[in-house]
View 1 (cartoon, rainbow, N blue to C red):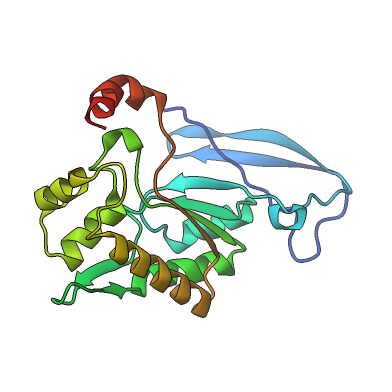
View 2: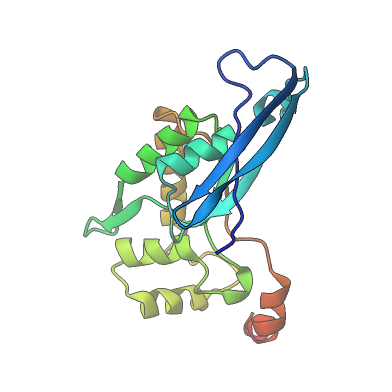
Length: 219
């Protein structure tokens, strides 16, 4: 069965390969067919491209969940210096303290951030919510705070958000401030990449067409 083959040739190395033309061949073999020899010609230019960090630019991708180390290493190797996770699937877990407060479990998130910094991924752009047209189910930070600190279930958290949909509910406001303060302190103390947070993912046109009219009427 035919399929595409990705051939990766590292010309950088510790000191970089010499500029010039290189000629070789690749032999492709199979258990049920004769080997095929493919000529390969590679030209290396005497140019070293700037990395995103050297150029003062940012290149990143959206991701769900905390990426495993081998993927983080590959992103860094291919000049990505930013990762954009969604809070609903990439966050330190919260547990309630029973008195209206909450505690963090930093373990998985700290390992993720350490791996990012070790591979020159120096920026994290964190979507704390999802598409705004799905309000209130897309307000993931406020939901998890309501469920952990206030002891509400999913339905109760949604009802709390709908009480005052044009702003953060008064019961949640101090929790959001406390969450942001503690995240910032922990990030600085533990050498996280530079952290940028936003309350929503960007609006999507497809979602606007599907549910936008209904949600706007409720706003």
